[in-house]
Length: 274
Ligand SMILES: NC(=O)C1=CN([C@@H]2O[C@H](COP(=O)(O)OP(=O)(O)OC[C@H]3O[C@@H](n4cnc5c(N)ncnc54)[C@H](OP(=O)(O)O)[C@@H]3O)[C@@H](O)[C@H]2O)C=CC1
Ligand SMILES: O=C(O)[C@@H]1CCC=N1
Image (cartoon, rainbow, N blue to C red):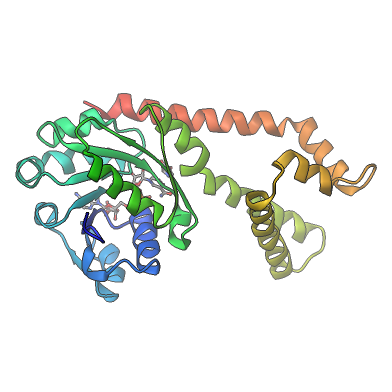
């Protein structure tokens, strides 16, 4: 296996930028990373740090080991169909990070029998704290599987799921997950201000608390339920807050939100797979 496979990103938006930023910080050589996009503005930040950028998606496919398909799901069919001839000649590994789009559709659009890994990463990849679920179709070789894992594990944790349908569940937990925590952060900061804190203080306290809670939950030898119990003194303050969450049915709301997220993955597949 090449030590650093050459990776080309088609689409240089939010998620590609997070992955590229994380890979660069991890020591991935600039010469092994390239990007294309229809938007010069999206490319300029990458060009400024010495990466090869351009607008010719087919030229990129012909020059890399791994193509990361990082355009919106709605753009995926047109982008991949335009690459079919080059894909059949170059036979790179394609990693699609798009929500919803099935590997079978991508393979067909790319001319058939394409090696496709579906990956569902998340934006904390930027700080090597990413969480990615991976699924490979039958055309992916053992070496390509290792390469895909090498790339995503460089920017966080990467785990394989055994059915493609589980990518929708990964999306609900970790792909979209950062947004849930940001939502909670926003709500806590706003509430802290309403309780009388200076906005900067509310922000610093809320964000440091999120960081600390995540770090302790990752390293502790007990689960989140026990960690919560350790914060919750009998007849104390936390108990009152958690009682409000329980009365509002917060756990049920979280489940409903995550089901809606996973179901959107399924409906994107129905809308966009033909
Ligand atoms: N954002 C996230 O947290 C996550 C996103 N994803 C997936 O990643 C994918 C990208 O999402 P995100 O980064 O948020 O989206 P963005 O819109 O930020 O990035 C997509 C980029 O692709 C460009 N683009 C459109 N058409 C083409 C084309 N023909 N050739 C090259 N580039 C093109 C877009 O340009 P323009 O805007 O001008 O159209 C845009 O700059 C999606 O499929 C999404 O499901 C997966 C996990 C997490
Ligand atoms: O919202 C979306 O559709 C994408 C996929 C996961 C995170 N963002």
